[in-house]
Length: 286
Image 1 (cartoon, one colour):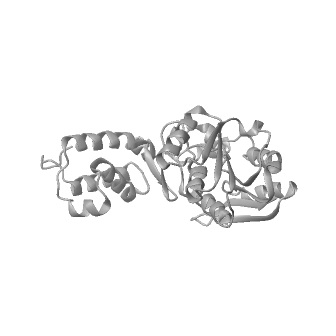
Image 2 (tube, helix red, strand yellow; image 1 turned 120 degrees about the vertical axis):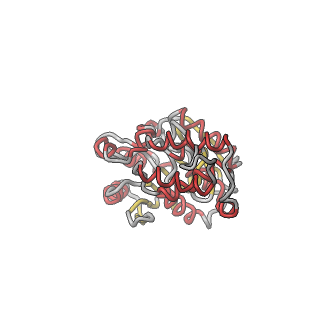
Image 3 (cartoon, one colour; image 1 turned 180 degrees about the vertical axis):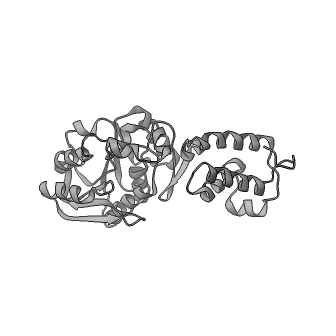
């Protein structure tokens, strides 16, 4: 990649060029993404970039940047391009076949972690585990815990295995299975789930990057509430008395999920807002 002068591009020029191209492609947070891409291709931290911004890119770095921009301009997810993404306090491998961890889901982890703070050797069940970001984060927060992660799809499960190793979260166990067909066995202090909850119509209105993520991790037939109904009913027997069931929920689903929990006899039903002020987590006690 050359500048208009025909000279090799500096880090500063590469950042500015990347930011402009991202903005032109309609990517909302072009500043954040440009910084992330430059960090990725150079291997430098933000502070190191500031002190080395006049350094020129190597041929390899330029070629890598060119390839990344071609992918990003067609809205291929940045998380998949980089391959590792920060979530909560930890890092997770992500790629084709697994749902990308989102900041909204950090609120679910924070809510669950707060509940666990006074528990000794807590037993945790993560249903529809995806990349494992929820269960593994809790396993790292509470090394004395035992965390079971349940995932149906092998494509996602291979990332769970990678992320257990990446985070050295060896107090975890991966089980392959369909949450909807589970028998609700076991005895847990906490059950967490970020299930598929987006309707087919809503999926069409989501951002362009979403089309590269697995529909099975996003879309739920009908009104989007099927997993909440099944989990609330089937897995109640798996909760200890006083144990918590905590869900991530979709936009405008919180009231309906609260009603499902009420109908199944849960108590102390609460909602928690995400960073945009949307009710994103619904939790309750047995």
